[in-house]
Length: 344
Image (cartoon, rainbow, N blue to C red; front, top):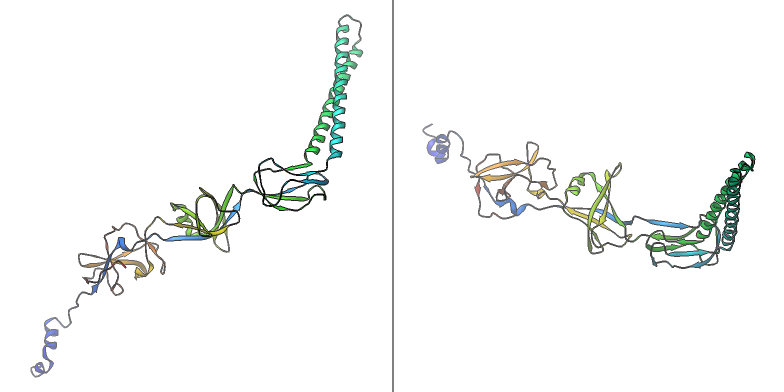
């Protein structure tokens, strides 16, 4: 043994003095303040602007188109006349029913006068019970005839009104299926009217993004280089089994995009996240390392998914997070902070 010491030099002596192993020096790491790294991730989903009302206006009676008062692209008000059918037969029927109502009212007036006369004579014992009953029956029959005539007149008036097609709501004429001079039948399509004021935005939201959508402080539609603020109206209580999505319906809170526009619904979460490349895995758990008084501390992030930004809550913004040198660190290991610390 004495003969070996000179040949082995100081290396063997160091091993003997230290108990057989070389003392491990603390690794050097670079750090960054957590507040310099965190960001609010943004999400988006395809979206389309839909009108809540798009009506196919059809004929309610038969007739020839004698006037087409609108054209495609024209804006109309509620109740505005759009199209008129030839209506002479319905007008004649209305006149006939008006005459029938006048005749029924005259008969009713006559029977009422007769009943009053018979009732007064009845008090003088000059009228039999049978004559009084017949007079009352005649008055009731005349009253029923008047009601029937009034109902027939209402039907005739309705037929005349159906000769003119009016706008059920304000909007834009987007299609025209007939022209002047054409004969139309009940149920035949005439015009399409689109409500360009009461609009909704339709978007398909992945299930994994529903929570962030509900918590988002701001929702916007990005379309054709413009941004339109929205409010969430409702989420359909149905899940698409193929795309694992739920349909959201949103409404404009200020300026509106044009019906039929397409774009993306965009929003951001209110929870700060750390970029995915800052995460490390220890014992199957994802997290990050930060340094406290020269010691590396592993902080697990609940719900973190590999390759995705992770939510960070509960840590102050001045927490020093390890960037360079974190891959081989152990929890509680002593470290030395290098001079190359930066914000990521």
